[in-house]
Length: 107
Image (cartoon, rainbow, N blue to C red):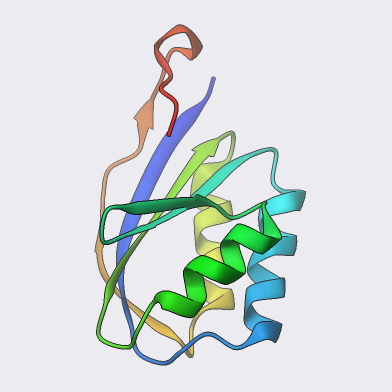
């Protein structure tokens, strides 16, 4: 069954191109969807050009929400947070929710 989980992180440093590629590769390998959300803008992390454009606009001291949907979401979210360890600090982690695939929504 699909699950969805999110966490809010505070961006401490600007993202490097190398870090953006790591996030992209992690999102592509995950059997689900990884979204990044900030200031009323959301991006699917498996779309490299949109991810790079989005992360270039994220300034230090900005809150960023990481949303993961799929199977084994906790493990993937931990991997994404580990990739970003020098760039973000975790503010709050929300609860895991089981979702019915008939009730999904489009971003």
